[in-house]
Length: 393
Image 1 (tube, rainbow, N blue to C red):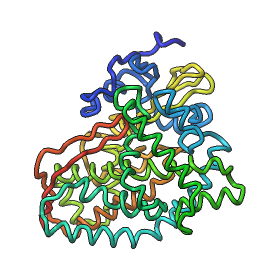
Image 2 (cartoon, rainbow, N blue to C red):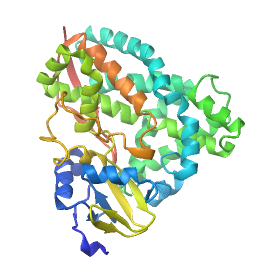
Image 3 (tube, one colour):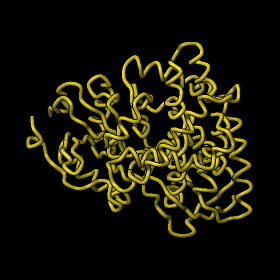
Image 4 (cartoon, one colour):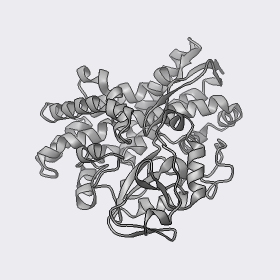
């Protein structure tokens, strides 16, 4: 099959306008067919929920080891992370970084996260108007998580910039990706320094070095394993929390429903992740001719897999643009699915639930206090600023 045999969608999905308002593009791709050719990016695209799930379920046919970005530079430079590895290599890396992120390990962190979130919201209520990004969404990921990971204090000023640059770098070679190059190199240098340092004994990063000493991974793989913790632990979580607060501010009825039933906090955060997915997409490469819903994609093709599109697929959910905290969303794919699902999703959900739990018991209404400002990133959908007023309960 050639690209002439599948429908084409000509738009560049990574312009400022498309990143700010992506959903009509996603709808057009879904409506065009199960597989669509994007000539602006030289990739096939899969955007329907069922098809995205099928691709993510088949890590052998749709591999990650040739990179998950949209340019050769990042795909080559990221080899060796769990994000960009396959098979036994992927499983070995995942086994090293996952012990602190198991459900049991994450559950043990819940009291500490909740205490920080509660104290944070108590302090913010005295101010009334706050920035929901810098004052709320970013606090746990930018302060508490680096403590868990074992990052030295003198390297933390750059963490958010490095994380954002990582996701910009995973896009096509546009201005954002080009501008990210320096920060990505700084992050890699920092990871190499950490891998050669004495880290806090019980930290997550120290666990990587200990695994190398036990022979579970080679020592030269430690920096890339550290990068696995670094980027995804920050921007995606900040995005998810910020987006959730925006959704509740613009859907006050859903906030009332959550206040009436605070036990739905985790479910509500899952719905927020569906409606405003933090990561728009990753790519895969076909290792053989691959069939997706009756369409054959040739071997060696790069395929854009759109999580954000799948999560708004009308074929899966009725009125998918509507934010509804009672909706059944167990199979939303904001954190991926299958063998390469985000290893830190439990920790991200813990942070989101902690902030929402602190808010729902203390705040009667969340109101926009000014126009939100989008933070345009090639892959992350988030806000740079989200001014809100917190009305005490």
